[in-house]
Image (cartoon, rainbow, N blue to C red):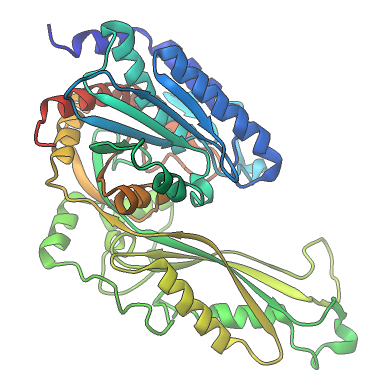
Length: 461
């Protein structure tokens, strides 16, 4: 009998209960960005810690941070075997706009093999798949094939501000051979994927201010510079009409990708048509000379994610607003340093700011880009596990998204991360009606079981 037979059979027999527990997990409105949900986020962390204790994990602890807690657990009785560190996050994006949800975001609903709810795919469903794999092994064999540590955070959706410092302070306790995480998407239901590259990110808040208070535009329109107009002028000058970023020095460190790598991406990644269909739009936009997949992964980008200023209510209001704010999000590629881009951006914004207005730029998030060697033994183990869990050979893909924790593992601990995707492109993460395809939940559990055993037999790690 194979060592995986009993755990796999247990996971299959307990599918209904696992989904019930996932629904319970999704019910917590663990929105890390909202102070009013701090208590809900802490309750979610305690639920997760209790769950880990009940399945047989040891030394379970909830570590407070300056914001939301980290959950830790371990099982270290596999003498001579490698150590796997499982990462995931239990915090979620805000659910707004609420009126666009077909069902309440924190009252998960199952329909047509999907579980709908905020965080169902990003990242509670994908995270719970690994926890259920641990349970399946511990409840049937009483042991794990490798040593395991779990580090689960509640701040990923706000840039993991306390994660890298925690790693730096606890390097010895968190020592491992490999990291595994599932917080990404696969191209389709029958196409498992391993992500080997993620872009970095830099989020800034730009405030333009003018008069001390709102002014009557009948009295002062035409003689007082409007901060909202000034903000729009500045933001418009940050990039060209096709998305090229105009900040001097911005592209100086962008790593050029070889023709061989671009050919690999073309044969493994999504087509322009597939990306447009996923986005629900008819035409693409952006930097010429690159496919849409390349624009979203190996090229940097700037997105204006929010802008506010002046009167927002019904009907007119004759004012010149005292201030206006824009939120800027840069996606960065190797070898761009987010702190250097922050400096370059501030300098350029200062040059663009007219003497009649004042500008203030605040750093909100900084994360470095990461590239993992596809030939690493860990990746071989992950690929073998995907094949056995999904019954198909996985594709290796780049992601345009960012996970600050992956960068922290890479730069603080010097460890590669196997990003095994269980989500789908149409899971609507960060949007209303987020869902998780439940067959992927069950295949994800099987894949995680296989991964633990594949790592155990790969002595090159």
